[in-house]
Image (cartoon, rainbow, N blue to C red; front, side, top):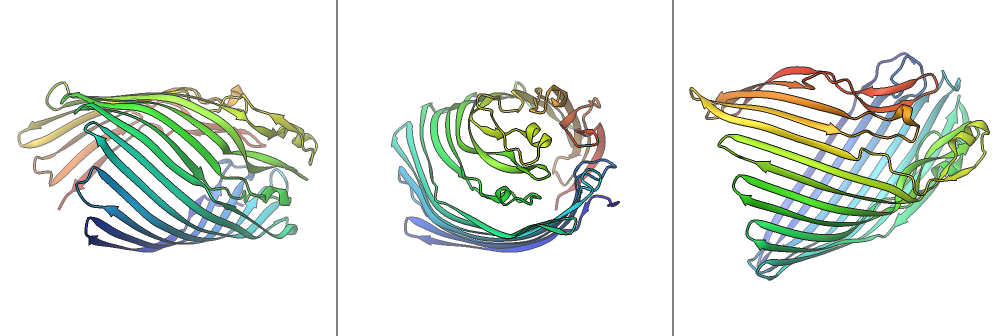
Length: 433
């Protein structure tokens, strides 16, 4: 293919919101219908080589209905309860060109239907002057069907139309306790259980094992934190958290006749970290914000396909135990901003600078593909009349023209990287009427 990446998508939708006031409570209804007609071409390897050029054609329809009943009074007990229903239909077809590496092309078609309903409720009870308890539960049933998944390579059928389905019935919820030792200080602790739907990997595959469903992802999240406003000039928030994943959805592979083909699987993992942020207003017009975060994680149970063995011997299903390996993400991140507002001759002026740091992003592909740590800085000046009828802003992003990569990877013909945006300057006019 010799085409430029692009898209020609169209969508429309409609929603109807209705509210009814009842005695001591309110009833709300939200009805929504949306469609998307997608036609896109992506050059995924971003090179002159044709290794992963793909045309997508999708037809998506989504219908949803929510009914919600909520308390509406001054009682120390507040609550909300409701019902949610959703129906989705995705008709997908895509064409992938691998001519420069496999001397072939691939075609995939399928229809995916999802139907779900849930019941939910949450109550908050201020059982003492400075104490509040929160409890919420949600029960859901979801059925997901992959119908007529078929693939072809070079025009020859690789996998005839095949259908699979999966169902999940998770119970999720949240329990939290809040304490206010002073009017301007909040201390809280929470434990919550969340679920992410299972599904199917619809990549190019000629092996039916490649479309076998992966399980739902279950997360137990624990958090302890505080929010404090010691004075009108200072605001400080902090939190520590621990995430326990059961069945985290991670990208693995199956070993097919032509080598590895991507497929999502499930693994267990844990992630923990802490965040601290502050806002300071030392003088009129001056605002300084700072934020710092740290996180670390590892897989506690992860059996993965040995990609190297599969590349050497197709259909050689050899597994390796990655339990104990670190989850690749930046450990530290930091950011902040400084802004100052003042008035000159009836005009309001705001000058702002913000900056951020992202730690090294380690890669499983080896040190060669680690993304180096980097700093970024932006700046802007905005001016307009005090009545805010209009304003003009002059801005610069990546002010010091830092060279950095967002990701690094490889294709058969070459190593690739996604570079960050270079220094960009511009102006913006805003009119309010």
